[in-house]
Amino acid sequence: MPELPEVEVTRRSFAQRIAGARVGSVVMGKPLRWPLGADPALLHGQVVHRVDRRGKYLLLQLDAAVLLVHLGMSGSLQFADDLPPRGPHDHFELRTDRGVLRLHDPRRFGAVVCVPDLADARAQKLLGGLGLEPLEAGFDAAGFHRALRQRRAAIKQVLLAGDIVVGVGNIYASEALFMAGIRPTVRADRISRPRAARLHGAIVEVLNKAVALGGSTLRDFSSAEGQSGYFQLDAQVYGRAGEPCRVCGTAVRQIRQGQRSTFFCPACQKS
DNA sequence: AGATGTCCCTGGAAGC
DNA sequence: TGCTTCCAGGGACATC
Figure (cartoon, helix red, strand yellow):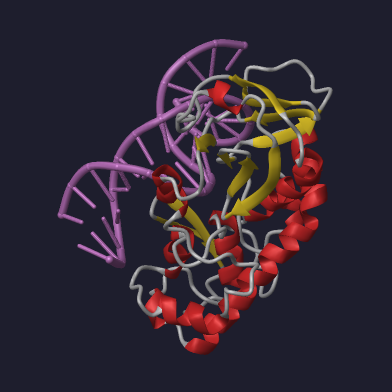
């Protein structure tokens, strides 16, 4: 389940190596979440200049196109010149003179979309509504608090929506709220400024820590297959329903918010 | 416009 | 053992 840290670690793992590579051919497997939106042959001969990230999207900048790559929940990328033969879950390959970039995605929630540039309407539809990058300077506590004050929905769901801050997925939302001592069901607009500041700090800390651990996490992920490396993050509440809170010993509770599981400690997160 | 519900997909776990 | 059911997840889209 790649969240922002995994996407960023993936980006760092091949961005330098693929920069300057010239595309030979494109191989498509089963349909992904959205159609590519362009003739794959159009990519032939183009050079990959850089790999950026916006939220959980990787942006491959080519000569005259941008590839938006989303890993969905089961996707992973490999870039090498001697990959094993394509398997049934390998749904996209960009073959270049420096190696093959391959998307492996059993559940096919991922996507590869080709647009001429980021001003393109399709790119805007996907990226235009995204909130701030949590690991960049623009994400500050005061602005975060101001944004929260405009929202009446439960704070957990506001975080997940991604239009205030991106990259806080289901796991890190529960973890950050635990770190900040905030109950996931509290209305966003009822969070005081100091508590919003604590939540802001928790989001930055949990994501930074995950990026730092990401290297080992991802290696395990791709070799172990299946069980993710989140165990290494030593979740405080996520996935621990009924188990004792690591801080106070109270049983961790699980609820559903918007069809998603939320975990919290009823004692440490009273309001 | 904001909030909420639905759906996409598939492997693994749990239940019968 | 083998079937069925449920669940996980991000995000677009429809509906209120």
